Length: 268
Length: 361
Image: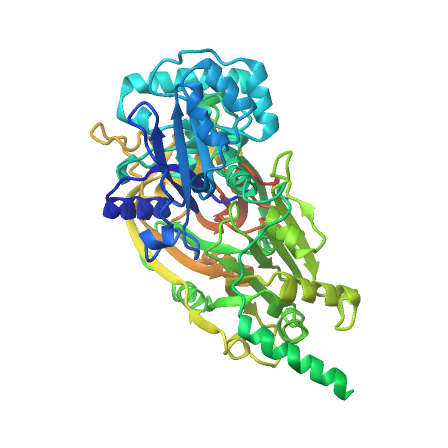
């Protein structure tokens, strides 16, 4: 079992509110969170900026309650796509996209959902919970996504805010469960204020309402989040096996050692 | 789906009865099997002041130690094994780790070191273990058991070298440990002096006393676990009532109270005063056995009370519950037992566990 993670904390401009959100998440027992930067293509052309490194934003990270480790902060990018041309951004090898830890896509039409599950290089596919689904889930793309290791994300904060959205959340989640049978689900908040965050065991109980079994619901907050984070990490490697890390080399040291070896050889 | 929602996570309550002075009574064995206890409370009805004997037993409960940033390979070192594990009973448990999220370690008094590690740590560590029983189809948690008192574990053996290499060089693991040692009279160094270079603190368990007034207590018959409808209460009803009393839940079902509608089970009597004592800390079974003996001797003189209870809670995050059966934390990690001791020294023993746990012995 992995530590609990909340993979969707909207990254607002205000640093203090983010800090209070982080402290609330650490107090509730989450070991990892992901700061979400949302790009919506319906608005004017937006540039994908480089993600701000968490160590610059927060000089000291809070300690997770009940352990002695600090909370881990990742960066995440969500693309809201309503047109197939928007996906070109993901296919192009834009340098800035590579710098995010997790990439998620929010498809608005059935065709885009199919494309996201089968071909796009993403970690999460967001499921709309705030309005009635414009399309039905079909088994082939969902099964392909499960095979590729892509997880479906459900949000729970809209359900806290409004009762109509609560109904849509539960009905959309149940229709997803009927197709995917509870596999590959991640439940996260989209909490803008600390009051909208809920503890990991409570979120696991909420998963029971969506039709997940007890162990699947707990996995949706812990094991599946860990798998998503690892899936995002493998994008920076070659086939998930080889890492490259830039190591600073001291050039002068090398020059002095090489002649010394040569000297030793001639002396011997 | 509604049927699934109505079910609570699985929990078990095992009830057993016996007589404390019977030669084959297993009450001490049950206490010894449950290694790590974090809270002991006893409730004596019809008692306002604690007898001196009990007071001195509680004061003698002993201290435990908290060591910060202790590497596990120090517990496998032979100096430690010879000084503490082989002489007396040594108990160690990691502090501030969660059993379902982090790596946990525990040292049992019979010399077995249990490591409960997650998948990444297990693969990096390189020691032989088995997947956890509560882990699901894809094993995410592994249990490694190392027997420190094994004859094949002497300093130059391959086993010992491998374990030391794994814990010291391959993947050094450091935790904060709670330690306690029951010395069977042998001379030698103490834990304080052995770990003086780590930051070791000696701590005393926290003890609170309170007197409850006008408490409704159920009527119990010692030879009847199930209870008869008008004459006595069953063990399950007693267990629920005791939980309500120890958590200070009011028993009168006030219409203005939104917290609880729980009422004391029928038949019950109103007791003018009852004494409740709670001890919180890292308490070892040997001390609990002494406390149990003194509570049995409480009925040596005639008293108004018909029964008294002793409740022991285990740590929610310990890797083992009874003997070496694995303990997990699903939605709750309770593993507790409760003695009800009657005037004639009959006892009821109730053992309760939560979802990811084996049936207690």
